[in-house]
Image (cartoon, rainbow, N blue to C red; front, side, top):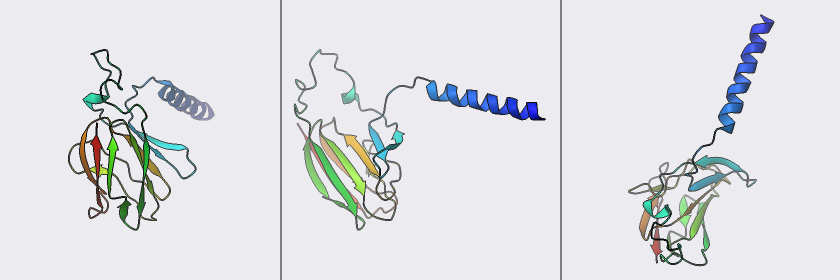
Length: 153
């Protein structure tokens, strides 16, 4: 009996080690961080065609992306996104931080540009916008929470 338990433990340990060391493609565009700043969960989000390397040989700056990408913060507090409208440039990133005790998400009204996991108090979600356009989003948990990000060249 002792040998069976030891063997089972060894097999589970090997499966865990092999699973952790497998090379997986890097498709993550967003991360969720816990209040201490450690990455708690890394999300895989479908990459936009504009995030792929250019076949034209031009750098992203030559293709109209900001040469100095900026970072913007959106606060989730009192069941609202602040600011509720934001205009940024292509290549800029936005970080949402949940300051409410209630859980919230960041999800595109249409499409898949924004698609966070549920954020608890103190957690963040970040996304880099590589496509020009207007991105309306909401909280799936509280659908009345709405906001918009406009991305320009």
